[in-house]
Image (cartoon, rainbow, N blue to C red; front, side, top):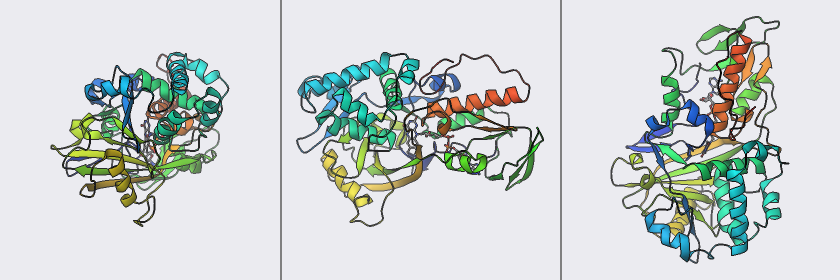
Length: 410
Ligand SMILES: Cc1cc2nc3c(=O)[nH]c(=O)nc-3n(C[C@H](O)[C@H](O)[C@H](O)COP(=O)(O)OP(=O)(O)OC[C@H]3O[C@@H](n4cnc5c(N)ncnc54)[C@H](O)[C@@H]3O)c2cc1C
């Protein structure tokens, strides 16, 4: 296994800055992801879950929407009673409840078999078309899908909602990096070589050995798995270049936490570039070395250095003051992670079974083969591994076939 970076993890890395764990882009893992349950030792990751509620900040004040089973005690009263009609009407809330329940309980194979369409069109049809959509669903999904135009596959959105309802999205105690570290630690010693870039995977015919050209020399291989980001994978394999979507995470440190809980905050008024923000150290105390608070804030696109630009850190800080209702000018900026290829676009129709065996000993794995999530990428790795074993004439270990985000059987 050859990795061009100084450690494994790819887009799931953590920088420890002054003792604060800043993931390279705020992200969560759901313990309900079927492949995560199988491939990872979840208890060893000591997952720290976010509350099952969101705070919708707006000019009329903060409103709370939550799953009563998972809403922090301090927010529960407002989640159950006070805010029942504040964000969106009852008609729209009932439509949302029906849709979320349908996504959560329906067999994933059924969700994937239904005709696909952009989620924006599906919401129009379902009657999710007023305040709840504008103030809650649009900013929430923007942070998860890295888009705000409603173009992502409805199937993908339903599978994500399913995993959110069935599990508690979390971060490991050691940061998201702990996931890749755990997988790498299980491999035979010496099988992972970091700081080695692959430049060419060779082009043999008729089952010859591939000559893989790397910065550490040429390596002969009977099978090669290209498990890079999708753009590099396209260059190595000739597959089409998929669309990728950028995201930026700002990590701020504050002496005092601006909220008492770790629920995700959304801006119901769309007052700036921020799509979500969370006092992550409230949900995940291991992310801060002391009593100071670590705040993760997500923005679509990439930042601008011009303080007057709507995508600047200064603009983000101003919006954070509106969202949390506190002064933010003294917050320290610990890190900015601007990631041009954060998520592979999941356009309809979603296909979670894209081929991983390309012929002549060339294989491919990654989120672009399944779905843009930790679950999808783990499944793609397993599918590629099984295909390599079959190609080499080795027995494929029997495993219950759970595929993609859905856990569909095939
Ligand atoms: C900001 C952000 C938020 C996200 N939020 C979530 C979330 O909440 N939940 C969720 O499930 N998923 C989330 N994701 C998606 C998830 O992280 C990705 O889908 C997944 O990490 C993709 O893994 P991958 O192995 O396909 O690609 P990558 O993680 O990109 O790994 C590719 C690896 O290939 C290496 N490489 C590339 N070229 C070469 C070369 N020539 N030679 C050697 N090595 C090479 C790279 O260095 C890298 O290590 C998020 C991603 C980001 C960035």
